[in-house]
Image 1 (cartoon, rainbow, N blue to C red):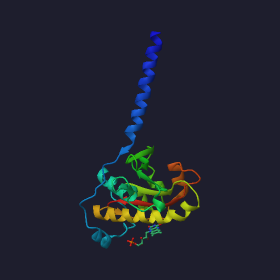
Image 2 (cartoon, helix red, strand yellow; image 1 turned 90 degrees about the vertical axis):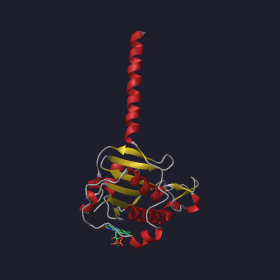
Image 3 (tube, rainbow, N blue to C red; image 1 turned 180 degrees about the vertical axis):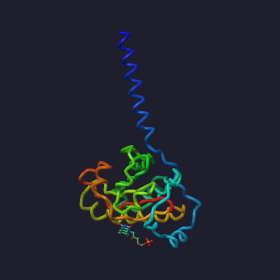
Image 4 (cartoon, rainbow, N blue to C red; image 1 turned 45 degrees about the vertical axis):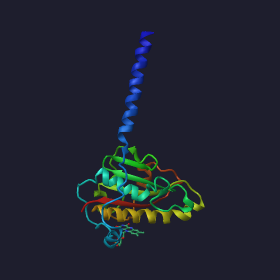
Length: 208
Ligand SMILES: Cc1cc2nc3c(=O)[nH]c(=O)nc-3n(C[C@H](O)[C@H](O)[C@H](O)COP(=O)(O)O)c2cc1C
């Protein structure tokens, strides 16, 4: 009897350690920045792509990462709307993935967190152009779900999302570039994407 209870204790301890390890790997993002920064007109006037040259080693802070993700795919208007328009007011039909040096993540807008998918650094496998692999962070935009409506609307949504990210990055002094020539097969493997998910674009971000 005593042996069984000690064993159960070990089992419980092991399980709870595992659970906390999984939670520790996720990234809880900070509340969105809704004031400050450059004016939207200044950001539009200065919008431009990162140069096709190496990024520095400097990483994007968690606060700035949170702001970029919120601009791309976050909730606004006190949780009633989204920062970009989704057709018929539906929930996002685009998933936002993030590659960081410490792993690969998918954004959960309801919990405002990045859920870890892998703890490997896969950044240099994302695209053929060498400068992309030097970025400390890469955003990946891929369809969520399927059907003719999503096929028609996906590019429009990614256009709005990536433009928001361009402007937010500009306001924060972060360099970013829209990239269509990415390594599709590598990304499918890294993110464990199903056959219905279609990657539309990636954006390396950092400092130059
Ligand atoms: C649909 C699309 C695909 C693009 N694909 C790539 C790409 O594969 N590699 C790259 O380095 N830049 C890519 N770009 C970035 C453009 O080359 C860049 O926006 C263009 O040179 C204009 O520069 P600007 O954004 O600074 O105005 C792409 C841009 C768009 C809109």
